[in-house]
Length: 221
Image: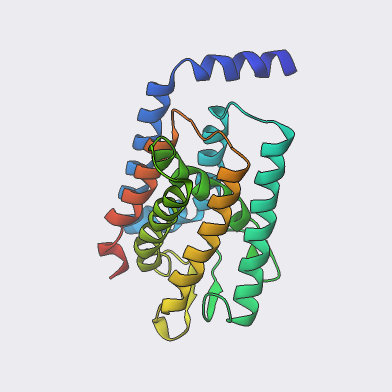
């Protein structure tokens, strides 16, 4: 079984262009189906599966699974999840908000997938910046700014697809400030630990997810 799995992984790694095309088609179909009343609720309910599939494909092309890298991933997962839990239960970090059913099962009013999402988004926003020949602090700033730009779009769509909702339907400025500060911490950790984020799928996945939410902006009105 293990040998067969390794063969499948090796085979998939030989066809990154095919997987890029599949990712794009997958998200285009998702956007289209959400706009169709008959299929909308079903495809929204597939959000946890889409996140796990995206993360799985991303990790398929990640080459470094050293103990140090795994420790960084674990820290970001736990820290991201715990901060989200503290935020949704206190309203003191991001503002007052509540998670909906779309992101699946959770603990303490917080979907477990939020931890996974923090790893994936830090990884994705680190990739296009890492090759720049500039100071590490500038890389952290740029990557964290990409995180905030992504969140600005995501926040407009999230309530419409029942990912989460804000008190009074107002997104507070502190949400973006907290998002940026956390991103700075996690990106600094990635760079300090020299996590290798060279990945054939990363940029396509980042752009695909970003434009997925951009194209859903009219749906959220």
